[in-house]
Image (cartoon, rainbow, N blue to C red; front, side):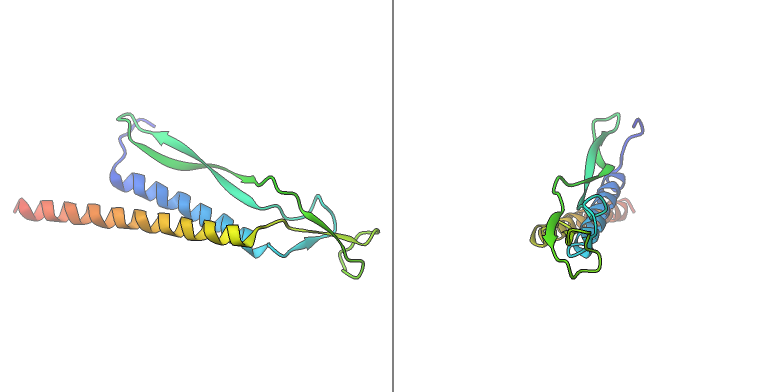
Length: 134
């Protein structure tokens, strides 16, 4: 990245990254109690992987490099009455820690709000500077 980043670029990219984080967390929570008939098709929680991006002046921002699956494996449960049960009567439940996902969601929302505050402060400072010049 060669063009210099403004405070608006930096905060905007950070807000976009936090939105991706919120969306993956929401997806994890939505699939927390899902079950599957095989381990291969069971839901695995997702996490965004971020990368630092520097401009030519040494200012940094963030971008989403990829969405990775978490290292947790689905939980095998014996439930022969479940319609998705395999021939052994087993189903696989998504291994999603709902409490940890809620904490992740609160943290991402706070980070997003912090960047909104940065943008509001920058806007106020620019407006005040322009007013002083009149």
